[in-house]
Image (cartoon, rainbow, N blue to C red; front, side):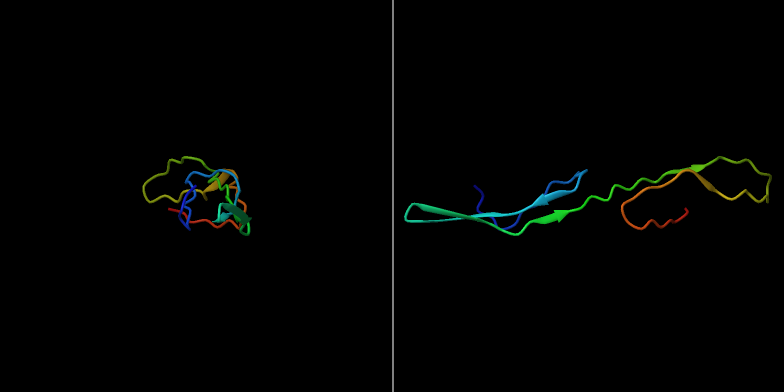
Length: 83
């Protein structure tokens, strides 16, 4: 059993995970245990989608608007930045 009051959850979570702390107090060889509240680490599975498609233009030409061929996904509100 660990004697620390903090916990560093592992990186790389791919699913929403729940955590709680179990506290044990031992007095006169009698162990009493209780649980903390439960917290949720929510994983926002976001994907970038796919932008279509490569273009060839003449010098000083105007490329067609860039569009998506596969939509981006995410649990929250999506916003975009073109680079």
